[in-house]
Amino acid sequence: MTVGMEWLAIAPPVVGLFTGILCLFFWDKLCTQRILQLLGAMAHFGFSFALVIAVDAHGPLVARMGGWAAPFGIVYVADLFSALLLLVTSILWFAIALYNFKGGIDKARERFAYHPLAAFLIFGVSGAFVTGDIFHLYVCFEILLMASFVLMVLGNEKEQLSGALKYLVINLISSLFFLTAVGLLYAQVGTLNFADLSVKLSSFDVLPPSLTMVAHLLLVAFGVKAGLFPLFYWLPASYHNPPIPVIALFAGLLTKVGLYSLIRVFTFIFPHSGTSTFHWIWWLSVLTMIVGVIGAVSKMSIRRILSVHIISQVGYVTLGLALKSPVAIAAAIYYMVHNMFAKTNLFLISGVVESESGTDYLKKTGGLFKSHLWLSVLFLVSALGLAGIPPLSGFFAKLFLVKAAIAQDELWSVAAALGVSVFTLFSMIKIWNYAFWKNPPADGVSDAEAKKAIQPSFAISIFTPQMISVTLLAGFVLGMGVFAGPLWELSLKAANGLTDTKAYVDAVLPYQGEIYR
Image 1: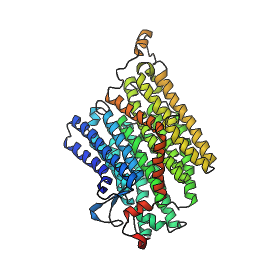
Image 2: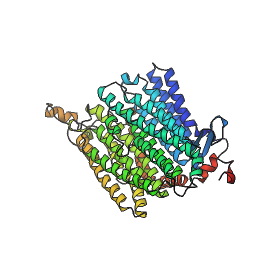
Image 3: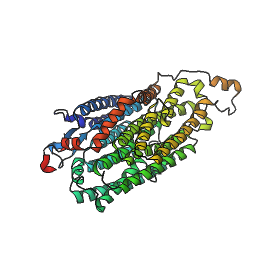
Image 4: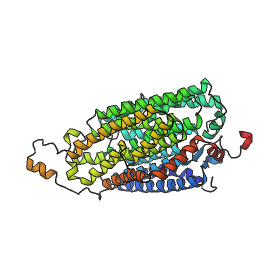
């Protein structure tokens, strides 16, 4: 730990909080709020980038709130896993803020506190990634729930309210499971600090049934947040309704906080929760992948296809967790980061498609390859990346996961990963064929007018905020493939920090020494 740099661990969530508060002071000045979002995202990126460099070089950084030492006080702890996710969060925040800078979201919805709520959402996400206390993780989830629920109902349309009600009720039930598990855990162990829990529970070769029950309660709670089968039904019912920037925020970050929590808890606190627990995670992962991709293949709306695809992609990450080895965990981390870039960008691109076509229903779209060439290229990069086509990020993410499964003779895991990839490619090709490749539907338009409508146009090439935003994220999808080697080493280092907790524990509880152990 680098003395004097501990404040970096808390800087990203503080940036999100203060950006939201500042936006409230400029309630009627939407342009000012947009600028504050961009500045907040850039500050978040600067602190997160510095955090990754510091943690990679010196180990976890710990910020102690109120001067109280762990395990008695709340601590913010940034290890390499959390620092990497903070860095990706800042990039997504910047890209979405840029997308919104001019016309990304209609002003009627934007006036109803979109910008403060988006910043408060980043505050909750960032806090969840760096908190060193499981009860404070619960608090961060509640901040996320409040901000995301209001964002989901912006516009007050009937379908939005219906989806938001399902989202709220199911997530409140998962919060009840979470809080119950936290109470039982404290009653049995006497601490809620991650490092303290790791040390105390490491004395068990096999957890007693009471603690195994706590682990299963947390699996259910985080499974709902992440969108695991069969707990995901709130997601496709609600994610396709809000404005595109809101969906992009949710797709890139909300389910990823659930995935982060699953990985953190089941590698750090409950690695000895029993083989049955990890068998359950394996089965849930495979079913999530299969059910999600089948649901996506059956849809004809771009929003709905991409929303249901979130579910199948969640299964890949938890499959790496189920395999348990450091290499498999590293593959899960790499896949998670890749998916945050690719999925967010696909939703933002779908917003451009919708604004150009007037709809996201595939049978009513067409001709975008001829009229918007650069947008078509960006879609292909992100879509083929999601499907796992080389040399894009998704190919290496799936390659690392498959190699980890083969090393453990988990051939059914390999079959599931590759089979779902085929159907993912099929659904991406369906979007391409309808929205980009085929001619637009005539609908009474003359042949001359239809031919004119698909003449090459670069009016939305790379010079609008929306196109700059999607170009930026597509660059990361491509860059993660080009620089797969060093990024894989970074993911492996982050995974080793999760499976070997000594550096984390020593940073949080340095004064305890051998007496504590």
